[in-house]
Image (cartoon, rainbow, N blue to C red; front, side, top):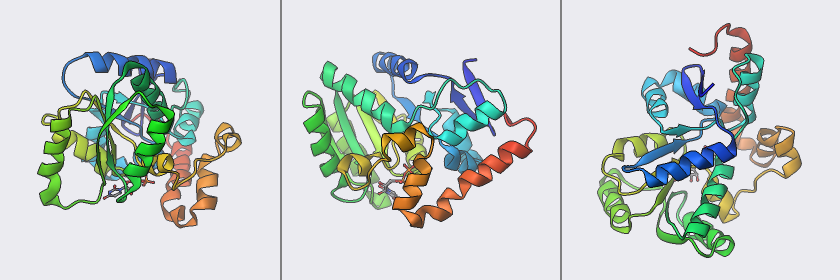
Length: 243
Ligand code: UDP
């Protein structure tokens, strides 16, 4: 199956390498293309926010991030191939940009985070070009100068790290004005790249317990993380989870 719906959110049924093929095709097509990576928390947010659901569903590539999405697919036999964490797809995209000499713009995170992330990214991928950096704490009146800066730098990829739903809505709102080939919402990925937040060790990732590691490290996320058990209960109690 090409696409799978979970509580009305459309996911493209792709493996990481298929997602990369789609991304490379996007780089060659005209106009700005969008990539979103919803997890269970985002699906639950979209239930209360129909505009957000619509924005996600208009994404050009929407991949399943997080173990909950894959579990829901398994329980209801929806046939999703695999989990494709946004941070991993971002890594593959950076690797591609490094090989192809493409340019990126990092937008989001607390002041200083994108700078730190860019140093780390460049030390791993020295051939890619980071043409612009901008933190994610801005006033509404700054939006035009942010757009001007991005459009002047014309990055191949714009990574937007404002958290969900802000980043997806921002990309959607400015889709027609943005001069980039691909825009992707990456949540807390710049925090991870900057070294401020550590990603869970591989063993947690393999066991599908990345959420648990995050909870141990950032117990203040408990409120947000309750969306995972709420999502799973909804998955179990709902007969047809597509709608
Ligand atoms: N953020 C931002 N501007 C805002 C709100 C959030 O730049 O107005 C950043 C925040 O600093 C963090 C990211 O957005 O780097 C959201 O991270 P979170 O851990 O919520 O994302 P997740 O990966 O869980 O979606």
